[in-house]
Length: 252
Image (cartoon, rainbow, N blue to C red; front, top):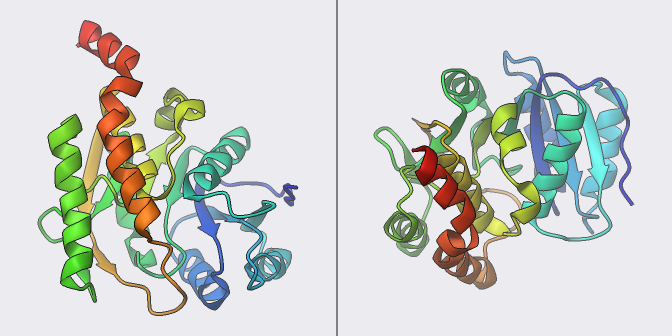
C-alpha cells in the first residue's frame, strides 16, 4: 500500500529512495533542506526493516517540505524513481532531483545541479569530467564504475561521461517525453537507460563535476546482480528502443 500526506509540493522535488537508511535519513533531510532552494523531499521507502519508513513519517509530521511514499517491500531503485517521478509530476513538479540517501552525494552540490539544469534539459553530477572524482573507493570499485561507463559509451555511443551517476536533475519536459512504462531497469542500469533515452530523444544533458564519497554509515546496495544487469541492459538498449532511434534519425 502506498501512503502519502498530500501536502503542497514545490516546483523543485528531490525523490529520495530509501531501504534501511535509518542511520542517514534525518541527517540527509536536514542537509538538503538547508540548501538555498525552495524544494520538497519525497521519500520513497520500501518497507525498510530497520524502521526508516517510520522515521520518515515522524520527520514529515513536523516538516511540511517532506512527504513519504510507502511501498510494501523492496522493489528496486528503478521502480522507486518511476513511482516518485509520476507522483511528483502529477503534483506540479517542474524540476526533479535524484540523490542517494547516504551522503555519497554532497547536498551542497544541489544548487549547482539545479542551475546547470536551468540552462539545459537535464544535469548530471559527474565523477568523470574535469574536477570530478571519487573518495574512499578501492581500485576494484573504481574499475567497475569506470569500466561500466566506458562499456556503455562503446556499445550505445552515449555522449554523457558518467551514465551511472545517481545524482541528477531532470526538467519536467524530459520526464514527460521518456516512455517511463518501458524503463524496467534497476540499480545503476536505470541511470544508464534514462541517460540513453534522454540523449536519443534529443535533449541536452550537461555534466557538472562532483566528488563522490563512499558511504560511512549503513550498507551498500551494490551487488553482483546489479552489475550483471547493467551489462545486459546496455547490450540490449539499441534493440529495445530501435523505434525511437529510427524516429530520431529521421528528424535528425
